[in-house]
Image 1: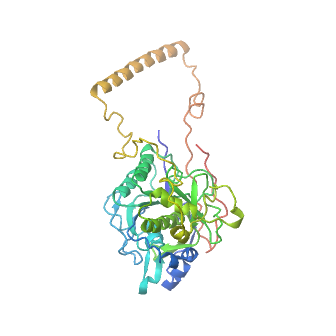
Image 2: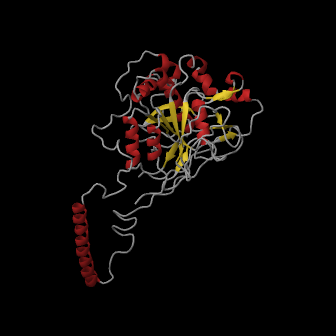
Image 3: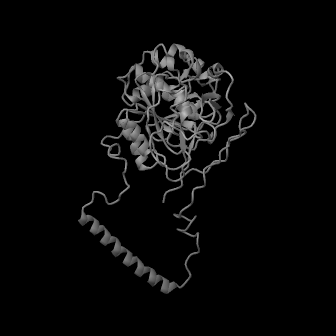
Length: 430
């Protein structure tokens, strides 16, 4: 039995844990650029003298991306929509803007004279491959096929800024392995619950999990944490491109993941011979920490290895290291990283007719024996069986205990600059 799944973007307007500070158009586009404090923190002008991400494609598995936005025009490939109706993913529906926001933080190039106005991404010359999914889907959405599509269509980095409350399926795990075997770096946001309950896909082995840091370089109190966290990046007061309005301002680890994906694009452009794991290694080896974290055992559950420093990652003398870097090694001979991602979808596929007949015959025989036993016991004991909910029943030992619904969003669109007072109560671990 599969549990109901809820996918939520983890940064933006209508998402779990994201606090919108304002979406009204700003009078001066110059102010939009001034609002982008992460670029100043990164020393982006110096970074772009070394690398701009040219020649690198970053897939954004998210809402479809608005390729006509002035800050993204010419940088967005057609991609593919896995939403109902299919088609390309470079035209949003006019309401869902999360994918557009993430794309702008990665590869926005601004507009106006010399691109001085609007939102600029950390890797402005990278290309975006939009892969449209329904972040609000319940029970049906899987990122397995979208991830494989991204890998098969030239992405060197895949950004997944959403969180999943269901268990990772074998097909999704296989898709992550597939990406790694094809030398693609998968980056995912940790979530905005402020808890240690693992959020997927960031907790899937082989995924580079990213949390959020504020302008003071301290980890955001609502950034989900755990032993899988590898890096932090800016995630508060983030200005990005919008759809319903030209620009928006929001909090979330979604934005943090986008900045890490952009930093990886800079590195893949500068060091094309390094593996995905070695790119992650450069980010980890050059990450920074607040003074009070110096000397702590790393990775720390909240800070990982620290916050990214793209300039140092591009210029420091760092040995390439192992091909896996900080990511776990793939199991040798793993068959889950090949094929079409339909592992387990057809139970009898590949079996010979004789084997199938034998299995069916065995099952029928077993059912006959069970039926006879049940009838004998019922005749002997009458109606004195255990009541519902007893041993083996719902809620009893070995019984099915329904998993509670995911926590509600705690977005509070109050006064600009206000924060949610506390995250929602969390469901128990499973």
